[in-house]
Length: 192
Image (tube, rainbow, N blue to C red; front, top):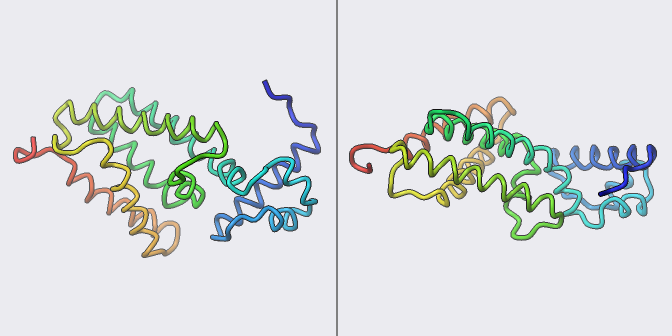
């Protein structure tokens, strides 16, 4: 059990994470010395909270990962397997194109924080369960596997990032690309 942070330490932690979030959203690589300066804190304060830039980035991404895991669990309760998968993928692609911290954290081969590993594992489990359930119900092509989803979803996010645009444009583009992907996933008599 972790001890709660003192009020001043909690304020510093919040300030560090807020500055890091702003930098990530601007596309600026996280450097702890830079974060300290922008947060108006000493470098030692930042290092006490976050030993590495990766730990800070994972902390910035954690709320998005937590929300996706929660949505995945909720989707598993949806009666229609196709709609459950579709809703989960829609929420996932929206997160990919609106949260700049998600991509690098999700793509990292190793995690710095145990919580990140837990969240990524839970997200993968939910996605796999939703995909398998839809495939078992005959809604998804039999020649596809849950492992195919990650590169396909990453492809959508990459394509949206290439086109850039306003946040609303990015979400609209992601929705169009996801609709195309979903059409390719759907079982037809040829692939059933």
